[in-house]
Image: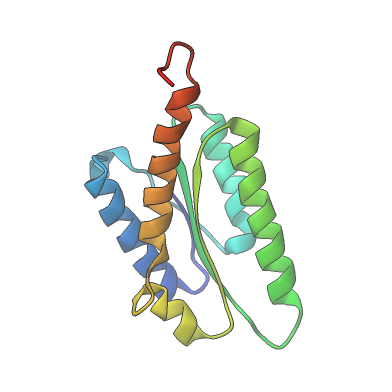
Length: 143
């Protein structure tokens, strides 16, 4: 998992949810690496470096970009989103998308374990579910 340190009060909650989901899916904590990066903009390059090693069956990207007074939000959220997808498709490795793009801190907290659930948990489950789905494309897999 690659986690943005920016908005850490939110991203730590996303990480807690993602860890819990991976435990539910049978991944022991010792099998899950967590790498922190400064912000959402850095998520794709860290994912790329990790996944290109061939050591990981899935990736999970966690971050929170909260709208401010300038267009910076648009550039960071768009670039990070596209970068995360590019890593996933380049390597054929599922990456759970846990990058929140919210207008307010309250919205982000609601999605990091609040009334709107935990998007980190959802991202981890999605990565594992996609990994299972991709198994259907292995040579000799039953259809």
